[in-house]
Length: 170
Image 1 (cartoon, rainbow, N blue to C red):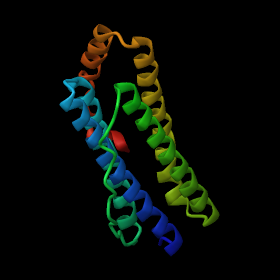
Image 2 (cartoon, helix red, strand yellow; image 1 turned 180 degrees about the vertical axis):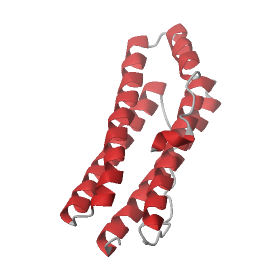
Image 3 (cartoon, rainbow, N blue to C red; image 1 turned 45 degrees about the vertical axis):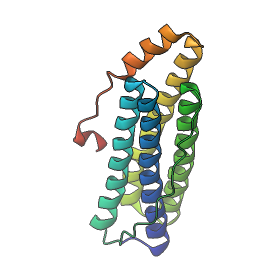
Image 4 (tube, helix red, strand yellow; image 1 turned 90 degrees about the vertical axis):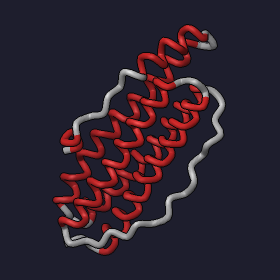
């Protein structure tokens, strides 16, 4: 059974994951409206991954007899400048999520909630990948500089990203 403190923290994390999904969808919209469909694809897939993360927490809470309480999702930023600034925003967002996951894991440890610790270990590993992906995109966009040909090449490359299989979240 989940403690009320851990249950509240997991509900907050579900909200953060759904907020992340919404933020990435806003970034996808920005790229769509700026003729960068590959980057829009990358962000759409990222949005869906974040929703999958929320559902993983949702299922964990239900499996453990907790009560999921969905909270309002704040409106995401929708005004962006360059593709680089969008991916920098994505990295900042992922760093915020990483900090929240680490705090959640520490709480699960303090409460000796071993099932939650095991589940959260997956998220810790996932956040390493999430931050790495954003940093790689930032590095590539910095290398491209203001070169339109390089930007279009990156856009095409990002358009090749495919979603992980649904079972990839386990």
